[in-house]
Image (cartoon, rainbow, N blue to C red; front, side):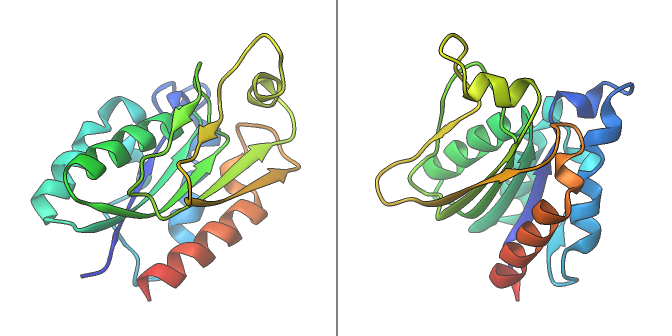
Length: 177
């Protein structure tokens, strides 16, 4: 059974006037190899309904999954990964596209590899680099492989940036083919 791919939008996915950017996640979905099994389109997985992903993992009896998140969706990705840790599901890959949260997010031990994509401008960039505001960073357990990409983009269009799309499609393709 191939690992299932789950995509979680950030706050912009539920606010129509700014959701244009978070819909850039669909560019990743459209570029994924046909072997990648996704549960419908990413708009089904906006951050306010992330528990539906857990319901789907249970229903599919998934043993390995892949998670992709944008903005606050990156925080929800960590919640899903932590649930997976407790329930014996391996997370093969996380693509965290410009994570935002008011705290440092701890990646669980069951996660094999993480790519973080950071926008070069905008408020998440400022928060990651501020002395006063902290957040938007992942903290890794010892031995978890990860890579951080600084991408020349703003927060909203980042999911559709060619660097992000190419890297995520490559990583997912290596895991599902």
